[in-house]
Length: 84
Image 1 (cartoon, helix red, strand yellow):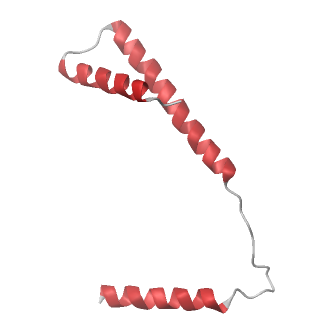
Image 2 (spheres, helix red, strand yellow; image 1 turned 180 degrees about the vertical axis):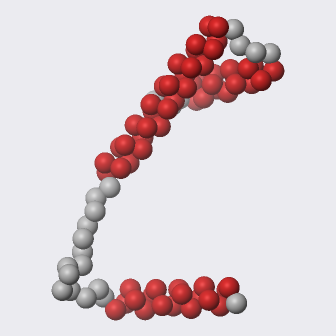
Image 3 (cartoon, one colour; image 1 turned 90 degrees about the vertical axis):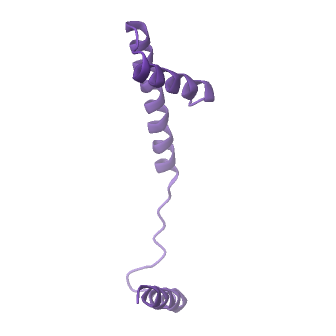
């Protein structure tokens, strides 16, 4: 989990690395913190992707509602007006 403390420490080490340099222990800590951060981000992306549900609402023989086409056509006209 990405906590404010984790982000603060990552940023603190990054600033110190740019200005003074890091000790071996701090380099190891930075590497471990980055690994934790990346694992949390990957976990969030995986959770998001797993929560997506694909719904195929239009059958092959079924026509989509005309209202959607009208809205799309109006949007395209609006874009053309803006671009010209």
